[in-house]
Image (cartoon, rainbow over all chains, first blue to last red; front, side):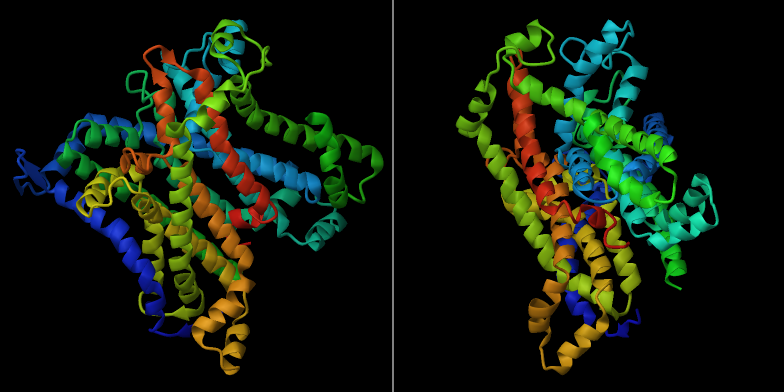
Length: 290
Length: 293
């Protein structure tokens, strides 16, 4: 659509700007402020330059958390995106049963995140949980509070449970937009199921899949509540992701300077990766628009 | 579950494979129904287990392992619904979620209109900058928010949580609404102005009804993300505006965890979400694509 040039449109954006300035810019400046200062208590601050940033970059703890975080996000994306597409391809197309599946699939998305943690905490317990009890009876040793592998598997399965529906619903929305004529044309050409997927369905889903990848990446990179409730970051530090580590540092130990420097670098990493996704996405939009 | 979904997917599948011969059609229908059945089973099992536990007494939970409650009890629910220190949490949560949804929509509507209709200096940068707020980890903002809202005297109020959640909900609402507004032809605006409508009157009387489904979807998402968030709402409240999700942690008493009450409280947090989903079920798929399909 051709847009009119109109500088007065700024007035329409103004309320958003004021609100976001209050709820994002001011707090962010506080963080920046802390990251370049040091204190001996008593509210006396002095300039520390990039000292905290240097410290944090040398700190092994942050790098470990970052690697754990990247591994986690990569595994999550590698499981949820294909599984979500697969589920979407198998969903009923219309009628009562389509709504039925939609409602049930959306259910995990609307459960408060700590309740999601609680559900899996209970579900995985060997004494009272269905999953833990069954695995125990089958002779598989499973204890997510002691065993690193079990803790990771629990956290990943929980995230798959929680968020695969989001990917599936997005992919489903993409599939719904494909006109029947495309399928009929493919049928006339006697295209195989795989070719229909590869050359019709996948390109049509590309736009929404980018949104899915972007949302899943951002949210898995910021994950805090669910693993915190289930494993508390343990055993040891095995499931301490970036946010958990950050909250420990800022609110637990009250190390404001290092925590602030950590925050800023954390934010920048997310921004950088998201910017790449966003650029790819808008380019796709443009290509489709022509 | 599996039986019903076999019939469920039958009509949809047939529509896409009409010309396939019947003997090939049958196994295919079963295949997709089995996949959906298994997936839904995977989704519902943990929730089922939570409901199962909420209907048992603590002795039964810890003493025997059973798939169904042997002596069904509603005591856990009664405890939550009659004790004010429990149910006030649900009221607190609902108050700030509704406040947040209203604020987000009111400021996002004009902004989304501006982004969808006009180009102005710095619009693309502004749009991306808005989105970056959706990418900000709440953990980064927890401490600064605490200090900011304490210093302006809003600490432990509903409005503080509502405003804090605007951080990620306003950008999302702008993003969704902009997608829906792009789908409305510009000629409608121009005709209305020619007919002598002023901007506010046009916006409220003509434009808003046209994107009603978009507003519904945006409201759904604001509700959802505000309802499920805990880190910020817990940091910003102590007593008066404490959300239910934070109150739940107090089931861990000296005598161990009160599993029955914990499970019942969990089940009750699922109910508002389930109701909202039911009302918007026909728009969900489109909404998840943020109006961009």
